[in-house]
Length: 448
Length: 68
Image (cartoon, rainbow over all chains, first blue to last red; front, side):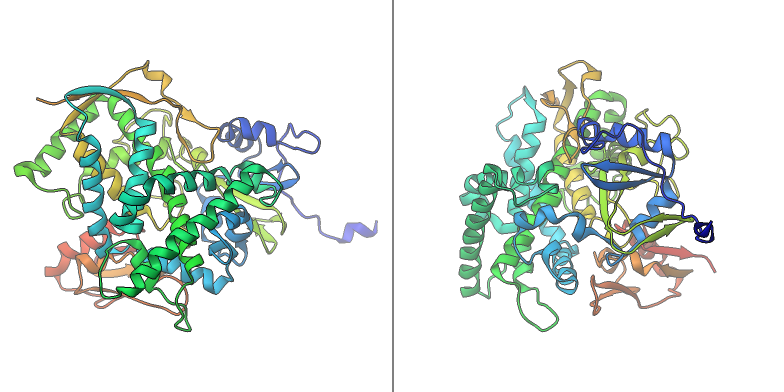
């Protein structure tokens, strides 16, 4: 036959159970971590599934994950995969900007996370934690899922926009931010411009937030010699290659993008750390002893004093292994990819699952067991709570600093106990950012 | 000792510059994130502790120390 001369192309194997039209959407939405683990178990390194018409290839294992994470934007595009963020961050911001402007914006975002700024953020976070616990009294019970959402909203606005904004405008900001968040639900990844009340509310909130931040920018430009030490200061000073400043809309977009990258991820992880400390009193006591040694003689919580806390760090790493805040990372294929002889065609989406990777027994024996002594695997692409490669989460140092600052302040003052049965504290796998199923109730008691 | 950096992983966090300014600088590049610049590829032994801290606390695991 004539066709026999054309070499047969290997395509990724398909996951069973696709329904007409919607494909695997329903099973995926119900518990996507479990679905992705099934896909990997059934098909191996590459597993193709269907998300309401979008063919998506899950790449599993350290080798495939390395290929995914190291491939640059022009072949595997983040922008094309994350278009739902455009009406949330604003026109011309990050995934809506031309590639060179996007790079500059991301660079300016990282400038706000550099060493000198981080020192200031550590002081801010410690102050917010002290204010938070000021009225706790000797003992009590709280839903820490909710508490940490509040705390990290306060730390984020304070570090990003400074104390004036934090203390005067947090309430209005909270409403606007929630409206923007609601605009980034699953349906937005199908079409973010549909006629829907949530999307109308999202658009209104963005306009109002742009107004608010423009006012602050105008005010600050009048007093240009004042130093603020927050991220807004860095965003306002950043320039493109031609020397021009970012517009107010772009600056607002960077503020929103930074909130989205850092807020839920940090609050969910902080909640899980405290819940696991309450569930593992043995490790909690060891970390307490370590903190008491490091912070003896009333040493202050600073970027330097937080730098090396090995037992706490290992504990946080294990929390991030079992409960990685972003379960799924995605890219859109722009140029056909040949992965070890298999063709992944342009137009498809590729994805990797941190949740599945962190439960691979080749790298993590007895993976469901919480064991902070197991250590990180040598392979950088097997343990990927912050992704990896050139697009690794740029906020990873900030995130770890904040988590350590919170625990270093809390644990020496209070002990924590579970309120509900230990096995009722589980991952909520229905949302895009992982957190424990709420409420996450813990009892605290002041130490003697 | 000899210093090796995986430049593609660098995002310019500047932790190395804070820990060992004798050995590392962070410089702007035309394209993308600022990048580490190694000032001394074979630093003297008395800087070992600083260099080890720079490698250990680099958020992106960019720096490796090789023995001669």
